[in-house]
Length: 314
Image (cartoon, rainbow, N blue to C red):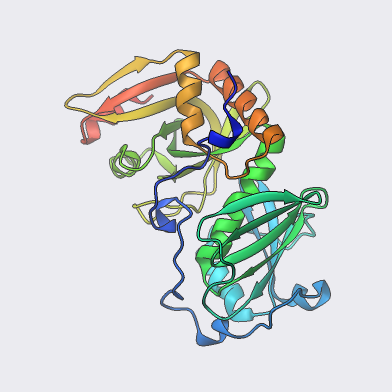
């Protein structure tokens, strides 16, 4: 049975700071943001030729998006925020104009809303208002001068891009061992960050919070992301084919149990991040989740928080 669109739990993350993987709001300008970033730009749409002097490319999951701003200090803030994920200045088709406004409420929407208007996506929260044209893959965001707003916009734009090709963002830690990626899925408190901290030296950490999943051939590939959780450490910008999906539970011993496709699909759907209540895309995500669990083995991983749990992950 397909999920009821109005009740779909895609992206229904618990309220927590944006740095821990949700889309809750931090309106204050963070430490280290120069004062000029908080009042440089006038409200309103910017001209592309003016912005190109302060552009940068952020490439996540192999998908580059140009960010264009007329504030050089904000560009430097973004370079620091997405260090390791800054790509070349190729004329990629996907782009976002960033228009800075003085700190404070930009809209009256306390929670994230994503809706389709005249074939364009409208994305907003109280600290930003964005539009995204899925045909041209271009958009704009009017936001307060902090990295949390653009971070939220990028996550949502990537969920829309991934939904078109059968991929998704997932509440999951992930790491690469011996050339294979493993996903460890669960909502807040399941143990994603704990398992990431316990990872041995031969594991390359992709993320402790938000995993990036794309179809590849007959399987799937996981990519590193800059979306950190409690570990407060961005993942490595590398990728590998996915070998297994583990649903986390903490217990008094370490054990692994196979999970059947039907249960795996239900669990997976609970942990996919998606904010647009669009029937077509929700149905596509449902199909993508079902295909994923047919291609990737799923397990329940009960673990005691010590490093020996990684002896089970091969």
